[in-house]
Image 1 (cartoon, rainbow, N blue to C red):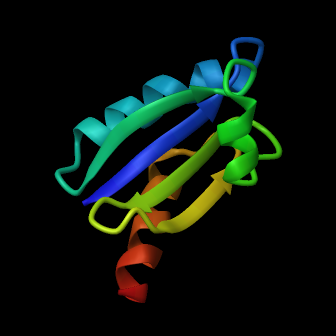
Image 2: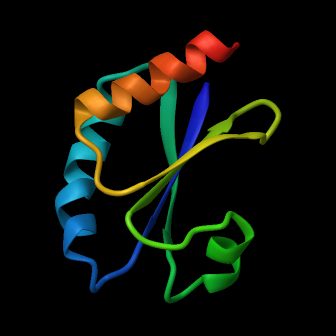
Length: 92
């Protein structure tokens, strides 16, 4: 299982468009879960810990180990999200 953490901010217009795409994509899969939304204005320390330098930022983590598998900056399409998952699967 892959945990996804989405980093966002209330002033971020691409984040507002990306959120429903990400949520719909997650709900269509049984191998991912959206575990957190992190507002970088409210929790800048967590954003800094993961090296987030812009939003939206999607972090893919191994549910069992907590290992960061990938981090992608920008609003992704469902196709792009699938490509990230394919790449992660081929690395395991």
